[in-house]
Length: 412
Image (cartoon, rainbow, N blue to C red):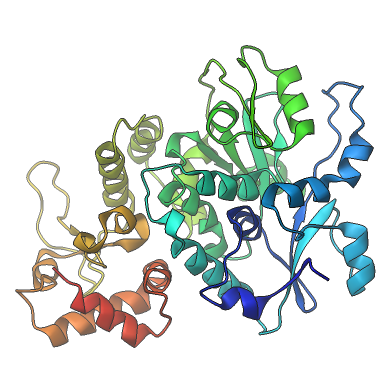
């Protein structure tokens, strides 16, 4: 069966997966028996032309996807179920991996994250390359639907842990998706969920931005877009992808939009009690159009300072001295892996912690003793899972002691 991948093969550094496949698995992976599966599906829309043969298109959709990635990895739901004697959730077609090395869900996503981070096309964070576009298409469009009331493309966003909630940050950190086109509506905050009705979290991207920069591969979704929105400009089809140049129109964003970014660095945003002042600052940043990488980095840094706890990641102290300008405790922002080693890749949330002035000075190469710096990096890696996961992916190294050594040797 050509379409059946093996986890042990994917684990090999030299084995390359198409970014569309990586995006699909990273968006959602389902563990069923000894298999890891990601599904593809789309349903009939009530607001689309009647002369489109949807049933025929759905039946051949796995062939369309295989032609796009130039590989025979997508397989229809019926063929997969009959071949493997398993039941798959409602979908049209799937990608399937034999879990021959017994990956846990966390280990599987760690492996995918590391594999993505170590691709050559992920290194340049300024450039939205064709590889990144394919990753985003896999992440969004395989399960995504076109909202016919607001210009959004949306997917059900599944998570079983705090770790899972962070998956979408890869789009902002490495795939050049601007923060202000991202939107999330957590199930826990929806009125229907609070009333006891089952709801899924929805992750969404601005549709105008999407069709301009990423494009649509699904002809049925193209039809939905063309028939439900005006001023969409002319259609350009490039290598099976439809692009448009719509007149960009701003639309209202709800509170969940702001919470989406908080989840990038808060362990459990749902339980946080944010002040109106903090929310106003977040609104300002989320509506900010970055004219340069410098603007983007400043906004990210300001959000990190504002919304992460004031505590030293090494000694745990919560009081240093009050700043004269705002009467708040002063903490320094520290790049765990020194920024000078790779500014493009290392200036991200998961590489940041707060330190008291004493420990920030101590962590400079020429200031502190190596033994103290090594011990401090171990403390950070043990206490901040997001930092450990990022460092492990960056160095392709899971051993926490070896990671601490590598980080310490690279201090500037």
